[in-house]
Length: 300
Image (cartoon, rainbow, N blue to C red; front, side, top):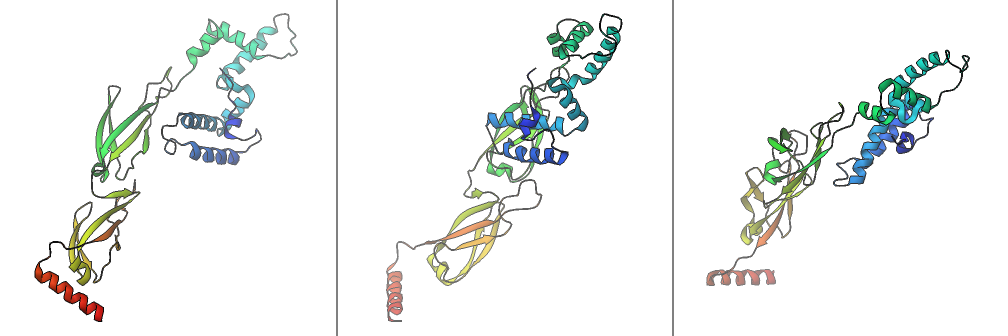
């Protein structure tokens, strides 16, 4: 097995303390997290390496074994046992009973005699591997993610029941631990990564947790004010229009936007932009009235 330098992966030296390890891990984990690097295989690989390095170095016992045995740290207990047994055997042979050093090759030879077969075969038999990670894409409409709901997915012939939280974003990736491929030799299962493809067929534009839409006002309501009924994502509400409302005026309806991801009962805002709808096909009386109004305005 190729030697992996966990210190190098985390960007720290061998004298680093627990605080240094934790700080380096958090910084790199944020940088290479799959949610921030969708469809980036290199970042995904780096993220796994960072987690593996942290699991070893953040555990004092595992770190000590790693510092002593390097790539074979997982077999340290067997090494120690082999060393003790071999030392005992050497006393009855031509080796000096007062000491002597034992190389990794000595241990390897002992493993071969102890487990049977070649060294590589015995390691392969005992080594555990994480199962393959699976990737899936789920297509939903914007209305589907306005409320939390449950769905059943079929991935590689296996049905998986999951809860989709309200407010999930288009392109967002979530991880479902242990729902990937089966582990090898008792190793952990892989994970399932689901990417959400959310289509918006509504008249509302979504930007984060806020929604945007436009509402047309007739000229008379814009000039004189009044009350109108407008659509929100959840239903209709009544709004008062101030007199002399101009084209492009914006109003904010607090809490009428989109639900905030994983924050139950918290919503963004709905921002409405007013557009003025000019009257057409004027009657003779209307034309005369507008002319009269024009005279009043020009003489005023």
